[in-house]
Amino acid sequence: MFEEFIHKHSKAYKHDFEEKLKRFKVFSTNLRKIAELNQHEQGTAVYGITEFTDLTYQEFRSTKMGLNKALYSEPPRTLLQETEHFEGNTNLPTQFDWRQTKGVISEVKNQGMCGSCWAFSTTGNIEGVWAVKKNETVSLSEQELVDCDSLDAGCGGGLPTNAFKTIIRLGGIESERDYSYDGVQEKCRFNRTLSHVSIDSYLELPKNETYFQNYLFANGPISIGLNANAMQFYFGGISHPPKFLCDPQNLDHGVLIVGFGVGKTRILHRTLPYWIIKNSWGKGWGEHGYYRIYRGDDSCGLTQMASSAVIN
Image 1 (cartoon, rainbow, N blue to C red):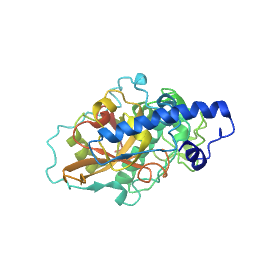
Image 2 (image 1 turned 45 degrees about the vertical axis):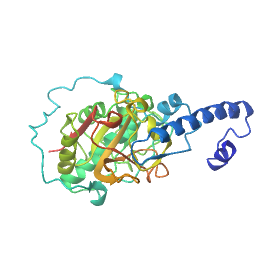
Image 3 (image 1 turned 60 degrees about the horizontal axis):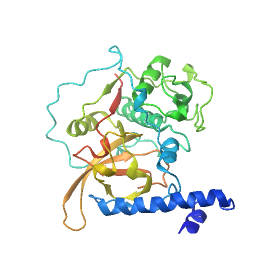
């Protein structure tokens, strides 16, 4: 299995015996973890051997994630808007997906071996809110945030709320075309004259999934943090790991909610409400770059750190 894995994913260490042995031990440990995830899965998700199966969780976390709660600071009152009193929309559809509205969700991107998930979560949110508000399709620069956001740590991690503050301070964010992604932190080269996308403020959303549904339906996709423990080996389906395998307090990955729906289990046909999550590990991961996770019990801590840019 390991030899097949090396061949399939063109691993560079195939002729380095010591590194190969080290990776084989990690691979073997991860096979047990995959079995445990499948054994205890409460939804319909399937876990298996992905290109990341030779990485320890610490290695995976530092290179493929990057949400860093330690960098959080209270938002200035001049930037943060209060969430309105929430009654709830009783006319919400059962299924809703912003991908079906042309121009709102950009193509799935790939952060590479850089802990910049927070930047991709941020740009995805602004792209969507801008498209809904301004009726204009944009693909924005994660590299600008990696290079220019002094509140965060580039490939060493960050937070969308800090990125929102930085975009407001800079006066905008450039397009992907004008400030392309390199996947390493470099000197800031932001050119305000090339940017016409800006935000006015941002919201930190209440830890309430019904609120999320209403907000997403009315305003666009939502930036969130979650625990990505189950995502390392995710193949597809509605992921619903138990809390002991996906601690809701241990947030380490920034992603984007783009929609919601309802599925059923294969055996008892039990209803499974879910969120549709856009990830930043390329189209080859998960469901063509997307992840579905159970909706309704704060799975993997997805309500704990949700935010959105506000564009007037």
